[in-house]
Image (cartoon, rainbow, N blue to C red; front, side, top):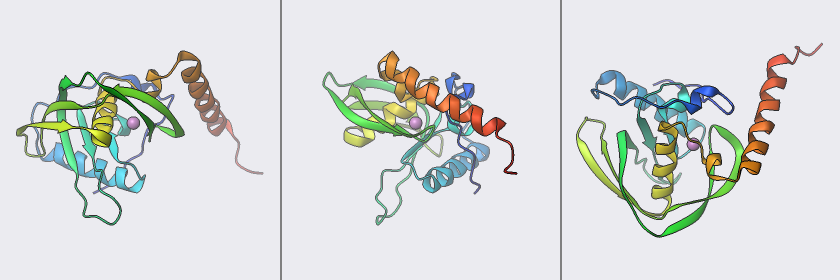
Length: 176
Ligand code: NI
């Protein structure tokens, strides 16, 4: 397995629409394993392929606690087929928007159809943190970030902050 680089805002690749996976083959499984390693090292609980620069509809999630055995979930071509009427607010963060957290409202529960690691069709019924995570990651596949759910004022402020940082680190001379 290999650790990959995680893209951060304002990288335009994070705004891409991701393509469906035709066949879940060894190459896709290798990518998912690399994504998992990258996510565990970050550390994070969910990662979409576009966050490592691959515009494919692939998500990995693991909500297990540090002292538990790992329980990775592999979602290929995930599609939300149902959401609950009830919504809930949860404080979200994202590996592509480092060190920024804010409250986002989403449907409380959802059902998602997807392919698993073996390419078999599965349906996942999610509530609580898993529901938040699944919806957040599927947003990534459509070029959406959690900050898009915030007010324009807040979003602009966050993006501006990261744009300044990117500019600075790009142009900063080596220490003399
Ligand atoms: Ni994210």
